[in-house]
Amino acid sequence: MAAKAALGARRLQILRFQVVGQLGSFIGNRANEFTDRVLGSSLDETARHQLLTINRLKAWFSRAPVAMISGPLQGQVIPDVIRRLARSIMHAVLARHRRPRFLRMNPWIDQCQATVLRKAPGTGGAALWASGSPSAASRRPSGCLCKATASSRPAAAIWRKPCNSSSGPPAPAADPVAPVARTAG
Image (cartoon, rainbow, N blue to C red; front, side, top):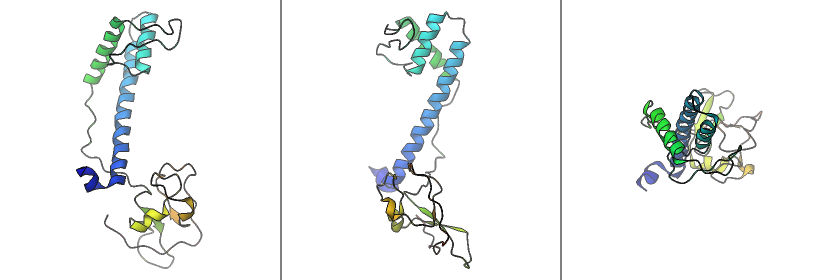
C-alpha cells in the first residue's frame, strides 16, 4: 500500500504493465532458446515432440501431469523422464542469462496521466506542451483504463502513446488550443 500512496494508482498500474511485459519478453526469449536446443539435439521424434509440447505449455517446472496436445500421442501424459529432461534443459538455458533487472525502470507516461497539446500560433516557446493537471483526466480517450468518455477529448490534443484505445489517435484540429502551463507532476 505504501507504493500505491507514493506513486499513485495509475503510475503503479503502468509500472506493473512494464514489469509484466519485461518478464514476458524474458521468458519468451528463453523459450525460443529451449526450442533451439531441442531441435539441435539428437533425440528421437517422440521425445522431441514431447519436449516441444512442454515448451509450448511453458510447463518446464510444473509438478502437475502434462498431456500431449497434438499428434499421434494426443491426450497421453508425458513421462517423468522427459519432464526431468525439460527441467534440466530449461535450467541450463536460464543459467546462461541474468534475470531481468528493474533498477532503471521509469514509468511510461500515457494519456491517462498527461496530455500533449500544440502551442497557439504566434506564441513563443516549445511546439508541444504537456499537461499533467487534474483537468487532463477529463480529456482521456475512450478505451482508456481510467474510464473517461470519448466526447471529452480536446480536438487539438496529440496522443503520443495510445492507452488501450482501439480507435487510434485522434487527428489534430486546424485550430490548436493555447499552451498550458507546465506542471511538475
